[in-house]
Length: 318
Image (cartoon, rainbow, N blue to C red; front, top):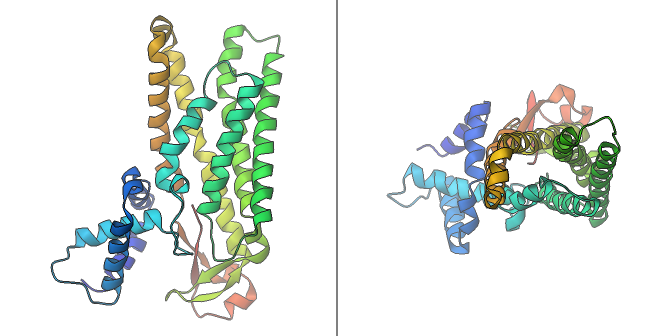
């Protein structure tokens, strides 16, 4: 195999939505959560040997792809450090599903709404921070600002909508119950946008590194940072759409059955949430490539004069 084979093929695969979907299904594979420290080190060493043309005999292309999958699922592409397990994309579904189940429980009180929205945005804030573009350091104050803003917006919107619906006298009790089940979606979608924007606000003021065709940094761009944050925020709006809409519809169809079999309500509700979360996550994060490309002519003049390339790449983050 030529030394640049994997890198070139990865770029080609991520040039299409289906290619990115296949790639991110690997990245979010929860089995990578159980990779040992020794396995990770062996994978990194194998990829380093491949890069320098010193692969031991007998190594197959399957072993190389598996090593690449494990490294990309665990190691941050900018810092080269391990991402804390609950905040990896491979941990998003296992650690996030219990929170989703709580958000979608029927007959929520104001207190339970506040608690579940707080837990959800706390988890999202840490995931956004852990998977950000980390070419520039982020002050702790920015993290706290984003966390406070996301939690405040989520709780305010969710509680406000619940109060409005409860006070809507024209709605029948059945209609009010169904509508209340959809309340988490606009609350979470709006809060997710605030979460991404506030957690990564420093990128807008300092810019993010952009690279030429050889992987060399040619400058820091605020324009690229704006594109990265907008693309990531859009995925965070798409992500909760099926998670908070489909389970509500499915559970409403099963309501008469579940009334007769109340013991099955929580298991079925949990399974439906897990299934929709597992399907929506790879679809949402596959909308844009992680290593995005942008034309130099759209960036700052100082970057245009620093390279002869017509386009540059940057880590959008996940």
